[in-house]
Image 1 (tube, helix red, strand yellow):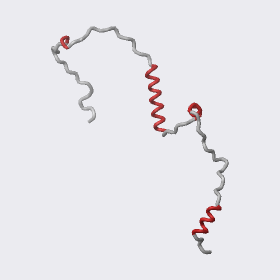
Image 2 (cartoon, helix red, strand yellow; image 1 turned 90 degrees about the vertical axis):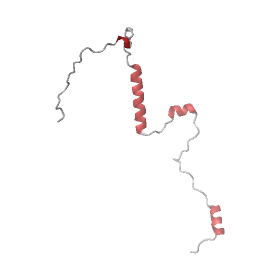
Image 3 (cartoon, helix red, strand yellow; image 1 turned 135 degrees about the vertical axis):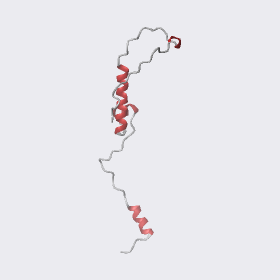
Length: 100
């Protein structure tokens, strides 16, 4: 079989019709913004979703946790109130040979 000439190929191309799209291929139409809010989705990676969820839960927990009762106002303290130590008494905490 001989290869077709350019003219013959163009003639065949003019006669060719593209097949119909399959019935299960659905092209989405333009949705209104409120319908998208009800049925739409946003794809994000799982680690980002988990981080967002944890941040939200922490925010809710910290916002709802009871606040400590207000302490009565104490007498203001200034550096003039501090006095030097009269006698230093060092204390050893733990064992000296610990970790050896």
